[in-house]
Length: 442
Image (cartoon, rainbow, N blue to C red):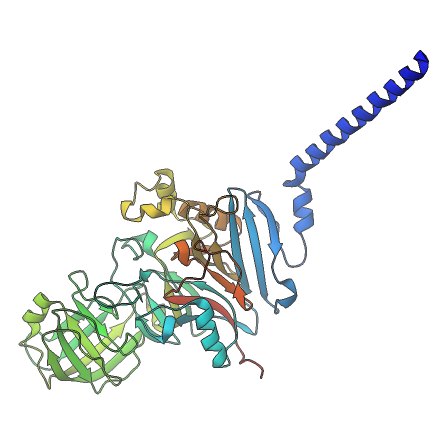
């Protein structure tokens, strides 16, 4: 009897040892997972080798991918869900495009709303991410407006003055944050400058520099040109304004046209004519020029964007800070991350983890990116330095930061695919998107 119990006890010990051995082996395999097994599992003809900072990658709506398009969700080991829509730059039926909310500067619109408008025009968007920064509303009646660059179908719709403030492009290499595509398909990422001048035919002071187009006229930008793409009125206060007609529209990156002044308004908030523009000047500058510019004054309006290649840009959109340059984290961003935001106090929001949006590209692909945040247990977001480092690890060569927070949204293949921080899709200022070149099939 004793011998029989001893045999059962020996078997029990053996089983326990086997179970313990299996637990140890499984633990070891899990530890090796990110070094070997995960890469094998994720390797297929649609994917590349993943960096160690990717815990997992999901293919979203794979069956609906057109040739040259991909949609992924990356699980970053730091605790964030990163959604990326990719476009092959050689894809014959895909292109980069942008769309202005409500088809004008004033006002906001959801990406879903903008894509529906485009579909009504037989244009087929495949993916879109919220783009530029702006103000959601103010006491002047502006129900939202972007304060970054926007060029759409060759039309120069908006360009601000460089300004060291969150959302604007600061006047430094870090502020080289506008992305553009030329008429021959070249991708650009530069700090874009407006070289706009008004040459009057009369008077000794016959040249007036223009600071911005379709932006707020104030002491930072005392001379602003308003076109019909801004809205119905300029919404300025106490500005001196001059209505210019008999000139060519729309404005472009390389532009020259004759004009005649048809109206002078010393109170501001002028109506913007559909066949003309309004030149607004902050009150002090306006008083200086009032004697030189009068009704019936004639002259020439000239615009020449720099760098020169931007004069041929067909689609262009601005953000606020550059994240990746030539495959490496932007040097100023690296210093910013190391100092926890102290090197650029005006942009210190970027040193905290938040939802983010971005655009990047390399020699082969374009990337539209949304990072979820502010959602404990799911995704807490990223700092700007986190983004730059992670993007460079993914093989992105150049990248810029777009508006983030609760606006961070990636729409793809008919629906919002990420999880916006407020739990709903916020209205935004413009959309950077991937679309089909051909019209929708009816």
